[in-house]
Amino acid sequence: MNNGKLIIVPTPIGNLKDITLRALEILKEVDFIMAEDTRTSGNLLHHFEIEKKMYPFHLNNEHVVLQKVVSELQAGKTAALVSDAGTPGISDPGFLLVRECIANGIEVECLPGATAFVPALVTSGLPCDKFYFEGFLPHKKGRQTRLKYLAELPETIVLYESPHRIEKCLNEIKEFFGENRQISFCRELSKKFEEIKRGTVTEVLNSMTENSFRGEMVVVIAGKEIVRKSKYNSEID
Ligand code: SAM
Image (tube, rainbow, N blue to C red; front, side, top):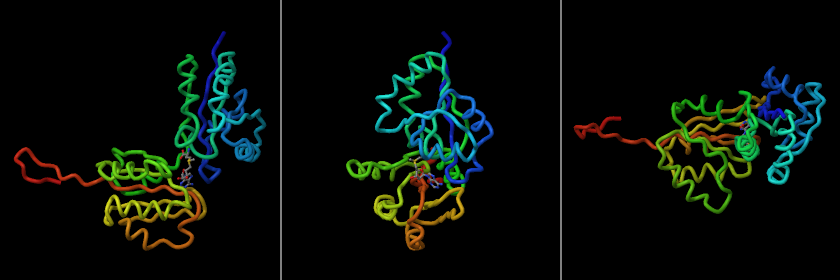
């Protein structure tokens, strides 16, 4: 029997025009869609006039439905995996399903498409040849340990943060990384009120208005400057 296929389909992070032609084609063609939130993805499908069977696949049920999805794919079906926004698997459910499919010899494909960290990183003006994607920091336990670790990294760091924790997060960056660490604060990427603030963490904090704490946000942090020694032991930068 022919194995089916799992296709990871990125969806827009704000602007619906960011859906790709391939994404629309795949969402129309697959046998069924696994969606983080069937209501959110239902609105997207409705907007693009796509009717397709959808099943929930989220953090609270992924372990339970994993085997069922794999069985369907082994029976030759093709499924798309979507999350509420952006690329599934990137701070969203997806990893477990991808790993299980690979373990069972099922083909996995990921369409290139929308994700929040790429535009945030690329517009930061900070080096993006090497970077460290942290995603969400732990909310409580282990948060400080993580911040201390990140503060020593030489690469540009990318954080996802929720609006109700952003002020705390920026203050922690000031405390752990130093008040002069450069950051880029991106809010509402691809949306009407997209905003990017660049500067030291202190400057960005001082420039925040009430609106700055609303919406979806990514923080990009400059890596720790490493003073390298030449082989003659004189400092070079
Ligand atoms: N899978 C998504 C991706 O590929 O980027 C990320 C999903 S994660 C649950 C949601 C987080 O992504 C938000 O809290 C925010 O940090 C970031 N995010 C999503 N959309 C965004 C946007 N339009 N502007 C800024 N950040 C965004």
